[in-house]
Length: 114
Image (cartoon, rainbow, N blue to C red; front, top):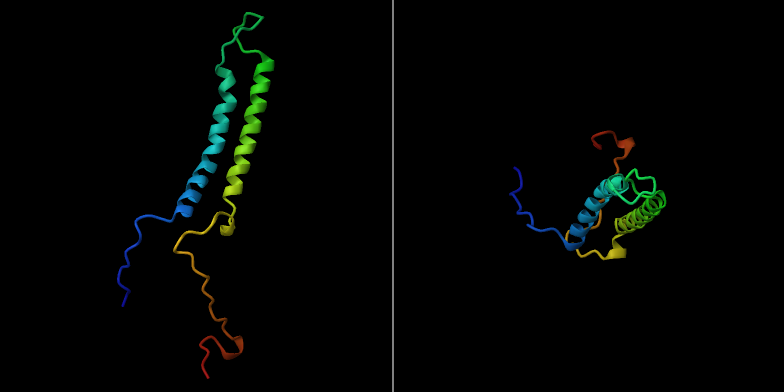
């Protein structure tokens, strides 16, 4: 006989929700980085050559700043995704201690019979 259906809570705990959103941010961070890195290809600046491109020094500074910003953002996301619940507080009601299972004795056989 199967147990009756237990209604699941409609909403998850605050820390679980935030953790999932940070995991989503970690997935989107490389996409943001790729978009920011190709942005200089779209720039049209005052080039001295008359070719209509952006200055190399400005592009290099921009790429360095984007690289540094992405590094800081990824470090923050990785720090927040730390699996240690005591660091950010565990306010989920569903946190329970792990269940231990008995280890079978090989001397008694697979059924454990006497």
